[in-house]
Image (cartoon, rainbow, N blue to C red):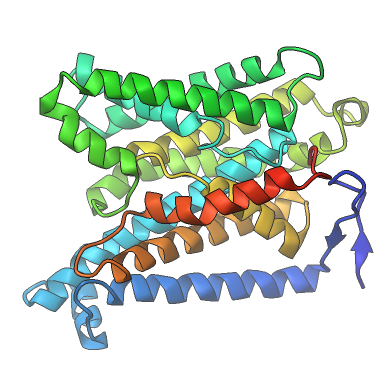
Length: 347
C-alpha cells in the first residue's frame, strides 16, 4: 500500500514506496554496484579474462593481464568508497540546508578542501596522506561555514539560489587563489594540477587504508543524524517543539558531511555533482526518510562513480578520462534542470 508524506517540493506531495519496495530497490542497486565493480576490474585499455581476475585476487601479478587487474582492484575500491562518501555528503548537505541545489562542489566545499591542501604543500611542506586529509577537512569546514554565512545575509535568509550563488562565487575565488599559488611553484604544480581534475587512477591499498578511518567516522556521524534530519525537514519550530535540538543536529550532521567531503577530496581531488545528482535520484526510489535515503545515496553514489570511471577508460582507449570530467558532463545538465524548475524552492 502506498502512503503519502507531507509536501516537500513547494506543494508537490512525495510518494513514499512501501518498505518491501525499498528493500527490492536496495537489492537491485547493490547488484548493479557489484556488476559495475566487476566491469571496473575487467575493462580498460587491456581487457582481461576471468582466469586473470581470479589469479590476481590470489596474489599473482606475473603476467600483463594479472598486473593490470592487481592495479584496478584498489582503483575500483577507491571509486566505491569515495562515491559513497560524496553521495552521503550531498544528501546530508541538502537535508541540513533544505536546499535542493546543495552539493560539495556547487557550494565550494571541494574547492576549499583543495586550497587547504595546496597551501599545506606550498608553505608547510605537507607530504603525508594523513596531513592531506586533515588539511582538506579543515579547509572544507571553513569554506562551508563561510558560504553559509554569506548566503544567509540579506532579506529571506539562506535561500537555495543565494547559497548556490555564494558557493559558485567562493569556488571561483578559491580556484583563482590555487592558480596563483601554483604559478611560481613548478616543483608541485604538475602534481597539483592533475590532482585538481579529480580522479581515482592513483588509488592504492595504502591510500585506502589512510582515508578509510576518516570515511567510517563520517558515515557513522551522518547515519546517526538521520532522525534529526527527518525532523529538520518539518521546519525548525516544529522540530524544536518535538524535542529536537535544532542547532546541535545541524552542526553534528554538517560535521559528518564535511569529514566525508574533505577526506574524499584529499585522496581523489575535487569531484563535483555526485552529491547533487545522487540524493535526487534516491528520493524518487525511497522517499525522503533519511534512514533509507543515506544508505541508498551511499550505494548509488558508489555505483555512479564506478560507472564514470569505467566510461572514462572505455571512451578514451588507450588513455583515460578522469572521473571528475565525466561526472561534470553528467551533473551540469542536471544542475541546470534543477535550477529551472520553478516550483523547487526548498526541500
